Amino acid sequence: MNIQVLLPLIIYLAVMFSLAFYSRKRLSTSGNFLEEYFIGSRGMGGFVLAMTLVATYTSASSFVGGPGVAYKMGLGWVLLAMIQLPTAWLTLGVLGKKFAIIARRVNAVTVNDILRERYQNRWVVILGSLSLVLFFIAAMVAQFIGGARLLEGMTGISYNTGLIIFASTVILYTCIGGFRAVVLTDTVQGIVMMIGTVALLVGILHAGGGMEATVTTLREIDPALVTPFAPDGFLAKPFIMSFWILVCFGVIGLPHSAVRCFGYRDSRSMHTAIVLSTVIVGVIMLGMHLSGALGRAILPEITVGDKIIPAITLTVLHPVFAGIFIAGPLAAIMSTIDSQLILASAAIVKDLYLNYIRPSESEKAEKVVKQLGSWTTLLIGLIVFLAAFRPPDLIVWLNLFAFGGMQAAFLWPMVLGLYWKRANATGALTSMVSGLFTYFYMVSYVKRFYGMHVIVPTLAISLVIFVVVSLVTQRPDTDILKLFWGRDRVKKS
Image (cartoon, rainbow, N blue to C red; front, side):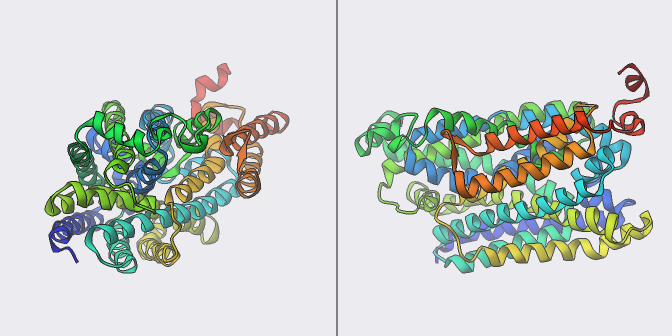
């Protein structure tokens, strides 16, 4: 066991718990438990919003899985990863202001609250909630595996021991502190991620003798590693273009990113966050994926791609600095899990139980959430923890599967619900059903569609069905349009 690496990590985890207990204190004195627990009382400034959005989006795929694929495929995967650069700008730009206005108007604390008010259809909310929980579990399994592999590779402990340490930490601090703990830890984690990314890349370039020498070594290993298309032509142009949909435009449909739009303080905070988050995403994505690709020149014999980051970190950094760096990838993974845990809990307790299983008045609802929220979060965390004991070789594919599933369910109901007045409940529901069916079928049997990722035909089919069904069925009620667009605009339309 590497004590020099483990000690900084223990200090870091202690800081996370202290922030969680601080947040718990705020919860106990909050006048509105629902808003405080699930969206932090809508009080985020620009810097905090930027950090929590970046920390939520970046994950085990960004710090473990993605660099692992870049190690095998070279600089072509780095190019592919940079498609994610505008993700924060798209999420806040498309959803931010409109989502925040509507959320305050209807007192929404979850994405499904918005869908419920927009479509007035219980099946839209139920299907959305079940889809959210299902794909969040798949995504969180990938994150748990990534965290355990980092601890295994960096400290020398076993995978199972690392999984137990990592899972217990992130589950407990999320249960204790709710959304505010998530946001505060995300802010610290975002800073750690930036520092760790830059430190690792500098260390790799120093060990490889500079960029030119390192790239030359890569070319000697395999010339395809320094081309845009990777060995065996895996990254063909249609696949690269379809990834723009999956990991760029499509992220608008990720509920754990979209809910961040509920919690910012004012428009100035949102505009600041757009600039900061775009810059930070760029630095992290470029730095980490480039580290994975260039790391092959330093350690060419790694057989499991997901192990490259722990291995290369211990090779190019002093053990103490390596211990500090490991907090960066762990920060990214923990910040994604905590966001998904809190939303999965909200989907079960708030969107399903309180709305449809046991409706109650707001005073009773708050009491129910206090009793069930933490226990539900704990239960989901334990399910994910048990599922992570049998890890695949490359977790990036599991994470991308979850990304695609959430987009198939949520993208068009959210975007068209906000910007197309003719969108109705029948269109939204048929779009969600067709999107999920198409996605599961194509992932299972088609794999690729004319060289593209299957998310492209999935979203195309669900969009056409949404539009056609909405146009041939009843218009939304005037009260809904007034709520989302205002009385005067509805009259003019």
